[in-house]
Length: 333
Image 1: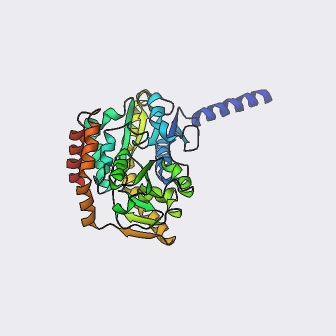
Image 2: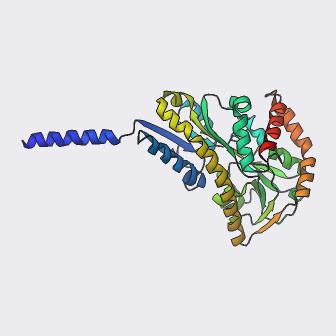
Image 3: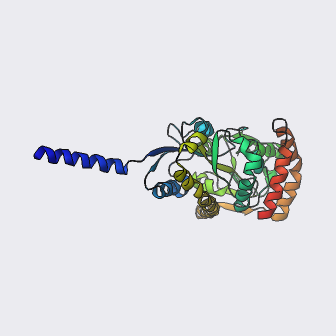
């Protein structure tokens, strides 16, 4: 009788274990550290929402920067080849990999994250999908336009001449070259240490990441020039997506509006929070007047045109894509 009870208890435990075990274990990788708001305030809540709406049939494991799967340069290849199931990263890394999408990042193209995010999603199927073979796009978004953060005070972009300045994209590199600055390329995770070591004396970056990576602790002068914005994707491996049952795919598909809404909210909130951190630290913040920004947009038009012409050597319809971006942005901005 005692043996029967033991066997019955073991069977109940096995059934209970199977009841809570996830049917679909999904790996998600990010190029951002685990404390970054992109993980804590966006992707972790999104993953939890998917888990809850599938009644625990889906379980996510997240790999952040610093882990074996957190390398910024490998995010797209990892999700395309199925090393991970979902990846969150930026199209500008590695450079030249997603040439259609990064046209949106050209200097002085977008005014707001909300408008840019909606425009990217509108344009994806027709113009941008070719940048992401083997994957399913869950969301595209773009930050608020960037500021310039420097060791020494500046009040205009022409004062970057001769300054070693971190450039997030090849188009900003072209702009900095035109100004006479010395552009330096590196992922955001290297900025703080590079600034401490004197490798760079300036950084073009949206405010949100300045707060997340604590760049304001090193660069205490800020020019709100609203130059470029940084696009970001959330991708899923196409084969993995197609292998999921229709009801789980529907839960993932239905979560897309959540991602659009959360990014529109977070870019503005994190920018405002980072600006407040810089102010509390006693940093100097200068706004570039709208009229002067318009002058810079006109001045940089040859740089933008040259960049598009160069891109057209590998993506022949680059001009058409960029013009469609500008036209679509006008609907939302």
